Length: 476
Image (tube, rainbow, N blue to C red; front, top):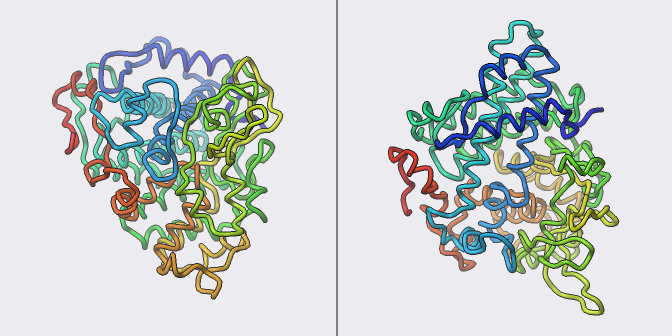
């Protein structure tokens, strides 16, 4: 089946068109020319190309140096930086909670999200005008785009709090009238978008194009939203529907979840598709190269992003097979083994090297069934779901004599531990700690100068220079 990253010339031209329409506003985007869009959005094929272009915004949002990686891993106790290229002080500032309002990385995160939202909102606007399209096709297409919009705003509200809420493609001039919405208002939009997606997306077994959102993906995201809002009743109901749907299951072993040839398995709930088949599209998997230490010893240049902390490595229990699948201890430099822990879930041995770029094939799972199980224990207080994850790892179950109760004597602590071990490197840790009100005590105990105020990023200086009516977060 066709994958979303194999986009044709029309989709590529759309991306160029989207990015060419930049203006000075908080979104840094201006509308596509009416003449161009009116001529383009005439058929289902046109919309498919536009949807493909919008789906490709996932590559930026989940990039190894994108917003979800920096916050989910580097602002947690899972990852650190040593030697890394680029705006080093600003990158270290994110790691060390010394972020300044002029931080260029934070501004790039803001632009990444609003650029993606502009693409999504443009498709949604044009769908409303497309009377020639099949009604069911329009519903599915709208649901796919609203899934993306809900997912992106869910990250944004957790990163910045209330943000300017944009639900249509706007001009630079129009954007000046859009100020920050409250967190509650943003969450209402998120829930509305994801609920629409749940009602109108197909089951995984019925999806026509691999990589497109499904009902289960929307339910999983919505369940996480409910957990974040403290609504465990709604979270339980929503996540149990995923659990009982028959669409998903854990693979027999943790090792089987990973590898360049492991694609869209029964465990995958929402997966970003990567392929090195056509290097010119830039859709090869970047994670192994970016998470490799900042050296050039294997024919490609490692970047050194999200280097694994000793604290994470040392938390794995004796005999936990996930540790050595997740973390490499270092790399070989001639006759010397250099110790520097890094994530290797996305390792692709033997991948083609093009210049200094490694063309890996590993996909990235935004959600997998293990997420659903761990969130179900969080929502219900029932350890049976978490124990399914531990059973897969062949570890003593919570409530049995072999469980390390001395370290994790309550179910919340056991769940916090389990989520860290199972999902390490998958951009989840910081968001889980925030949701469970554990970020400040856990991270301060490990030397990070974290306060409740610092659990939100600053609004970038350039955004407030463009519109001084947009307020700054407390603490900056």
